[in-house]
Length: 111
Image (cartoon, rainbow, N blue to C red; front, side, top):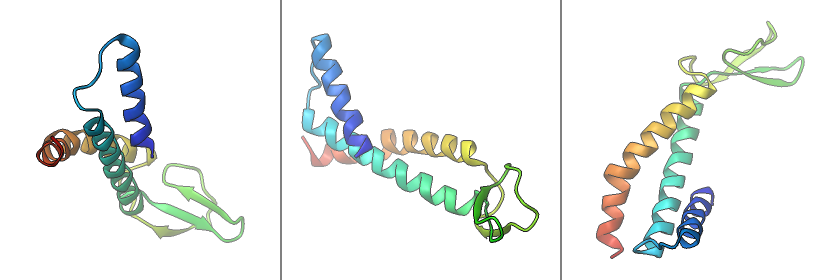
């Protein structure tokens, strides 16, 4: 949904500036597809390379790099990246995949 709203915003801003994208449907589908890819990548990276801890005593969830209780136990991921780094890698990969794979692939489907 986020990608679709970004595509819709781009179309609206293009319209307000006096220009329109060549293919409105392609813009919406492309933005939605990139949003989906980015969301999946961010979730996957967060679950695998970002450590998440849980403290049963305080019933709190902690991420790596945050002061956590000594009794907190690792429940998922490994401690390679923090949340900000996961976001950065996710955005970079989404940009690369969107431009080199998703866009050209959609162009063969939607003309």
